[in-house]
Length: 270
Image 1 (cartoon, rainbow, N blue to C red):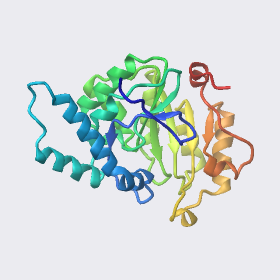
Image 2 (cartoon, helix red, strand yellow; image 1 turned 45 degrees about the vertical axis):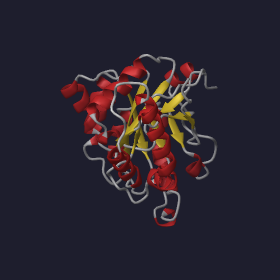
Image 3 (cartoon, rainbow, N blue to C red; image 1 turned 180 degrees about the vertical axis):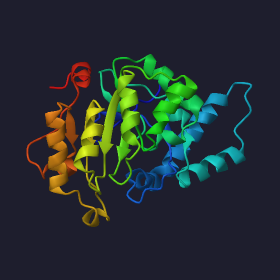
Image 4 (cartoon, rainbow, N blue to C red; image 1 turned 90 degrees about the horizontal axis):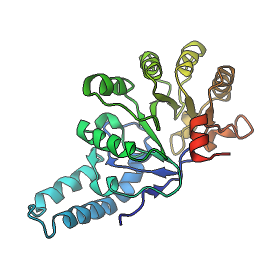
């Protein structure tokens, strides 16, 4: 029996399933890179042990030193790499919300690895799977150019910090018009998105998540209360569920953490 995927401290999901580790965007506020700096050696040990176990008593070639050094470099430098040991982990018994890539952006995944993940998701319809990327165009390319169809229990998340979003709206519209569940993630919200483009984007999605920056850069990149109030107002007017993360919810009062009907029903959220 494999180990189970990891429980999550991220409030909008129950578990994380990080089949990939690493990202090339190099955002100055990246929390994942900070985690990687602390735990890459642990991940290296677990992944190498898993790979070694797969070749014992088989006719496959043994894992040589150069493979160890390559993986070590990738993990230490936060370069995107597929982790077989994480991919094979078991899912929990109960229906749950699973964040597929909290330690990576799927823009840097190999196409064949994306297909492997999608194929496993198809076999597990009782879970909700969340994908995030800053490259909004990616989903459309995967669908049109590679024939990938995301199952109905997937939410395709597009993330922005408010600085770049000009080309997001049409991609969001394409995804929703073609029957996908679409998620807009504004985190950390460090630059205001004005009313009209924000409203247009929100109208194209099924769910909105918003949070502010934490850590050493937080004081200079604070999410303004009025930005949040506008976002919540637009969501409410258009009946789009929104989830204000714990690090920001105090600015608006109340819980303000809502899920789409599909997630509430499947995961029995009250």
